[in-house]
View 1 (tube, rainbow, N blue to C red):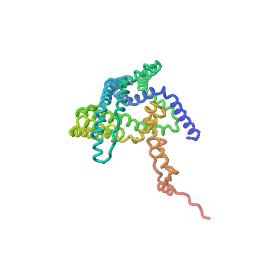
View 2: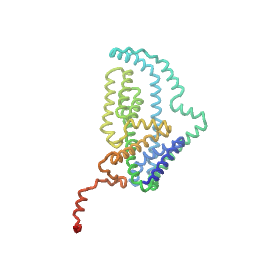
View 3: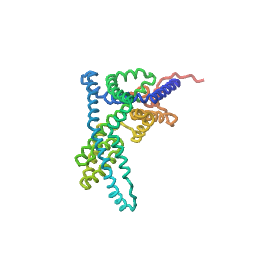
View 4: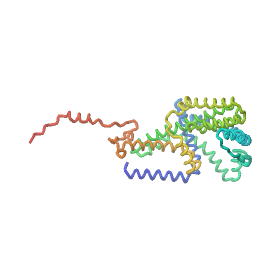
Length: 389
């Protein structure tokens, strides 16, 4: 690429970033639809391989996704809301257990005299706000009823997401082919190689890690329910949702479940059963779920994931949260590519600068020239003997 082309590419990137920032409020449903289409496209391709037409395969996948969303909203959300309400109602019991049992135990073991904390006002405040909100669904609907424009905007977004998802699913392969045709031919092989690497990282995280999170949430919730923990669903799903950070989901779940079972039952049998539930869940995750659903292709550090989500939300709001992981995956691939180029350059101090053959063709791997063979070939040529003077 010439310097002019590089500056044009930088200007185009800045233009796209600026437009994304300015249009963030109206881009949210399109970004959500694009993510849903990205998640559903592999299943559509598999159904096409089984002799279904593209439209029929899209209809099947779209129906399954719609059913999953409806079941989540109608079944899981009310159950979690009830458990949150139950937790807030029983919060004085948990706090009293902490003051009467935990703090004296800490004082007896460590000698620290921790003053009692006045928690009555905190509990009353939480109850007041929760009852005023009437739960998640009621608070949302109550807020919408105050503004006709807000109702129109939310309904429009809700209708746009499934419609745009359907059309993106149907035309996904065609859109990818058109984007490929628009790429500058000089850098098209490099962009294609980086895009394939980004897709491998992103698909592993979104499809694989989300599946692991949901599976762990179900395992923890079912196990804690069988043990007899009242807040089983709330604790299990919370532990599953933060399990994308290694060990954090298990630690959070164990601590919350132990506190809940000690307050509720107060015996060592239930403590052992709770520990067994999380031990089984961690074993299944390590030996079955992660190798099968995720593999070793993610390469995204948990801290990078957290930072990407927080930074995206700070810069672009809800749109930034939706785009955080895709952008983070692309940035990670670009950083690896930049590191590869740097370590093979003269600036780094490499003995022989190696030409990046993969920049020209993703299937080609460059090898250092065989200088000995070159010398041998030249020496083997019978050159005419020059007369001595």
